[in-house]
Amino acid sequence: MQRLIAIVISLLWVGVSASALASNSIENIRMWPSPDNTRVVFDMGKTPDYSYFQLHQSHPYRLVIDFTNTKLNMDLSRFESNSLLVTTIRTSSPKQASSTRIVLELDKKVDPIIEVLPPRDMYGHRLVIDLPGTSLKRDSAALSADELQERKVTVAIDAGHGGEDPGSIGPKGTYEKDVVLKIARALAKMINEDDAMQAYLIRSDDYYINLNERPRKAERVQADLFVSIHADAFVTPQPRGASVWVLSNRRASTEMGRLLENKERLSDVLGGVPAVEMEDSFLNETLVSMSMDHAMASGYEAATEVISELDRITRMHKSKPQHASLAVLTSTAMPSMLVETGFISNPTEEQLLLSNQHQQKVARAVYQGVRNYFLRRPPDGTVFASNRASRHVVRSGESLSRLAQRYNTSVAAIKARNNLKSSVIQVGQVLEIPTPE
Image (cartoon, rainbow, N blue to C red; front, side):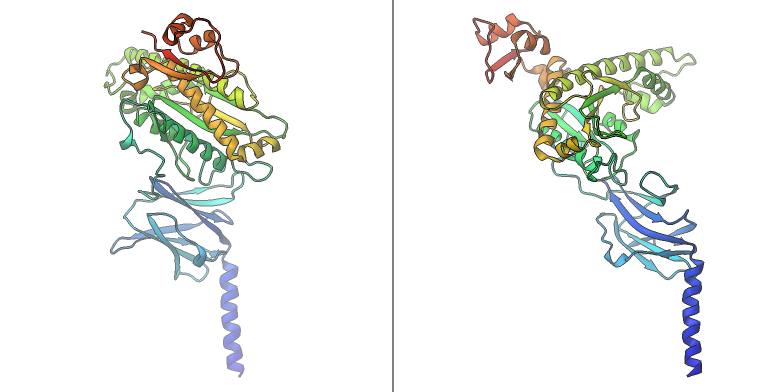
């Protein structure tokens, strides 16, 4: 009997010793699959001490992470993978009783990128693992790069934040990333239903994309316009209203310097023309400067059209496009804008942004503003440029002179096209707008 008691005490001591030695902990594991990779995040109690190795002898392939002096504070049996790449996450026997071994079973062989992140905002210490490879089926409503057509105007739509980055959080706990994704999807649907345009979603689901990578993705599909959708926030709940931001001169100068140093991207911006190799890169700088000036001027003009439409359906925080040094507005190859759809930190606007009806109104306003811009400035070779007339439904407050200014034509041309004997028009009236010669 005494020997049995001694064995029990010994086993209890081993358990207590192992627990005592485990100075760190895995509090949670989160997974964010995207079309291009899967991100796995380990939420840690402290800075992780870890090592890893891979097993590629048989399928499924395995990535094994050993967390030194760490205990697992979650039930992995309830963890379900929603990634096409990561099939299972499980534990295995560690080398030491005080440590934890985690095994990621993978469908393909990959080269992981592993990074330790310090506490920030709502998160504590983290170990982040990025696994490149197709991990998520693209939304059926989102066109892939291969599905884009040459003769249609391409609008790249960027839903801000995503994945482990929730963006701003409203008083009721509403995540900015969720609201703006719904608006971006609604906008993409409206654009894709337009015979003259097509939408390319930078992110089509709940995952994160690096800020600098977002405009690069738009450049790779040769988008005609880049629109980033966000929801504003402030430290107090009073501010409210939408606004639209464009690239600042200061940020543009910084990006031009970076671009001139990146010959591969410089060639892309110049339409595939190889960068001129010369000690004095005056020609390259001149070409880039011309491209940037056009992009910035066009972005401001497009933003003005969007503001005009937003002003019809919601309160505006700023009545003119605002210049900003934002990382997502760094393209010199195309016009770009960032649309703040409202203040999610304002309880009234948070409730509005949660409303599907308001989301649809915001998406419709951005769509109409973008369409108005391309009717005025149709890119060569597109449906907008080839159509000799466009249809417009008259709305409250519009006049022939205003329509002539918007579509870059004249009152006389609109009257002649529609056989109008006077300049009086009615709400709901359908007009054909002639494209200028």
